[in-house]
Length: 219
Image: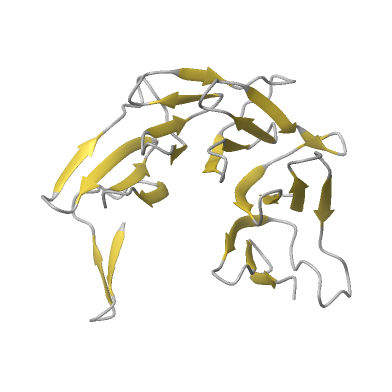
């Protein structure tokens, strides 16, 4: 982990982390910085400089985490989500035995979690009652590798996958797959999509592995 100083325009190494593989970094509402290093979850408190390890790989392998509306931390590994505060755990139903990892835990404006997986597509979990829906298990019968999720409006979600971008309507379950098209200058530049972000003007930014950055705006 490296910390950027915008005034000096310099990066400095974060001394509390032992050069592990960093899968995710997020800040909670209290200003604490949470991150995954070598499949272990840590929390750093900038106010006092304390760094605390929250999970151990012997008990919980962590590949993604997210916060609910109460700022409670939820962690995901290969097939389950767990609330670290309450200990409540929810297992994702799977259609076949292919090994998978949870790649992303995203909270929407209705306080539901959208869960991206590496083999079994897209799920949603309602933390209030524990109900789980398998929204998109596959595309054209092939395993669906989902990397990122971004809500564009109350009904529409943009889903980053290894097969392109899926624009998903949560109200009716319909979806549209955007893929790279040869000789199409305004189309998606690459099907391997790793990240999606919405800016303050409603524009959607799509980061790909081979094709760089793409931008979409309705206007």
